[in-house]
Length: 361
Ligand code: GDD
Ligand code: MG
Image 1 (cartoon, rainbow, N blue to C red):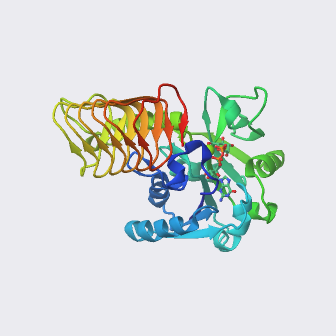
Image 2: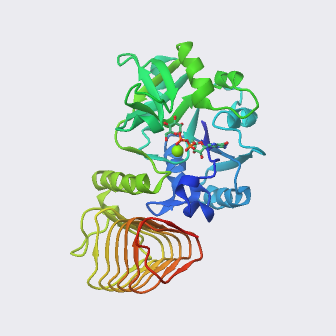
């Protein structure tokens, strides 16, 4: 089987992290977001993953070489010269996706995190025999997603409305699809939205089926959702692979610590924290609800709660970082500084407190 992952878009809602790295390569739970998806695809027998890219192609090509070899899977790039939306990239990669076997292929949004029950989806696709299967999930705030109305018994989708202005339903498109190659005949070679132009049409033809995704789901393309997604992911790890989580008297709830990270004495860490490769957490640090990315250093007695600390940043001693602060790559917060929701662009030195949520350029 083959799969295409939509890797375009500028990831503006995840700035300043996406100023250093395309969104799919931003670490989530200590590995690039997209790696979670590639591993899940590989587990159900996908042999080739096509990344549909339109942004920082050189970085993505480097990634494909590094991880393709590591995982033993073929990863190729299909490059757009203008953003082709969420359907156009399928037309562009048509020759790669349709090998004449008639076998369905996966299409994934690159910024969603879930348990990826892809085998269940393959079974569901065979069962209903329609042209397209999509995963749906329930959310409290459906207006920022694609809303799906379906026949609860058969899964047949009756309506698909992208970002509805008024309430349509609370089941939304989870961004995980299985498509028969015949769909490619319906997509023109131009910027097109699969959600606005293709799915509503296939629903009308009664060929679009949805299954409710078991387990957790989150679009982690915005800082607050990223932190919520981390909590859900670690919660799921607790039931599926608890030995991957940290344990000890200094750990509260679910915490993921890379084995190369150094943790000082007298720290209190958790719940819902990820600490990446080569991070240094000095003595007496308090961390909760936060992601500390590769190479960052948190100095003595600093306190971080509700934040993403970008690669190779440092947090000074006695500093206090909270309220969805996001520090870009290589940001240095001086000792005793307070950040209340600061969004700090890469390579900055912060000497004064950020007392209310603001962007620091
Ligand atoms: N190659 C390519 N080219 N990829 C693109 C482009 C493009 O021009 N534009 C967006 N993408 C990719 C993004 O990187 C992301 O992986 C995916 O397509 C969806 O784009 P988002 O910008 O993240 O869309 P969204 O989050 O507002 O809405 C989508 O996801 C929701 C679930 O998270 C829709 O699919 C909704 O229906 C869905 O509910
Ligand atoms: Mg998204």
